[in-house]
Length: 260
Image (tube, rainbow, N blue to C red; front, side):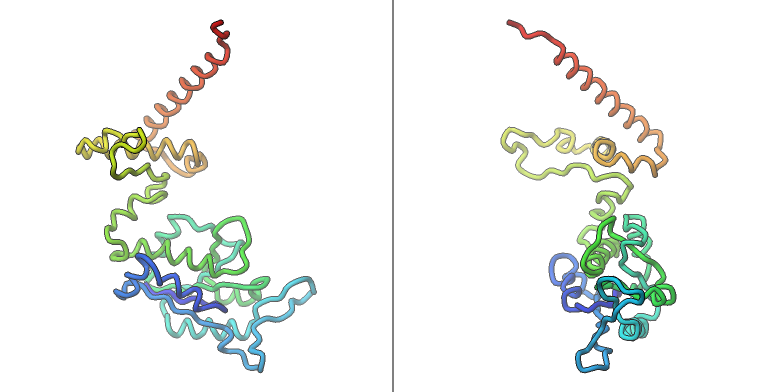
């Protein structure tokens, strides 16, 4: 996978491949990240890359000509790449979108600054707008780095064991199950016996159950977008029954009179 990032801070963005699994993937040639700086295409002495918006108001916009020139350089280097603009107005980045983007051989990411990019440039040059969430950052660089990391994990050969990506949170729609390592006993808390049983079928069932329970408790919105299998529905009903019993027990204790 080849990533090109149009940014005023290419050295910063390229640092995403300086540590961990992305560093190893970059050294192996599995992924590459190249910055394309609009400032390299400025023609005045101050290397200007911003301009005032029509209609007035606070802030500046990225200049059309220098941004367009940097995009053209990126397109020349990565001719198969769609252009993704990091914008709070875009489609929210989630695991299905990550998997969709991971099927592309190349990606160009446009990281805006100031108040953003001239709308005509977005309309003519951008294939997809992507948002990390409903908040605003100082620029698109952090969003680009998050997207690069998430997408790269899906590329075969980036992770030491590709099963790690397949078991991550959201890989199968649900939050990830809890994980444990040695020692078996830590401050009186034991690793669940099923994980030490060696019975792979029971372990997989336990992990799915834990994922569904956690998703219900922490991210109930996930259930609005998922059609449950018979097994998943059964696990949800069992979890609800457990929660109801626990609530009833607590309520009953609250109503008891002190024993004195």
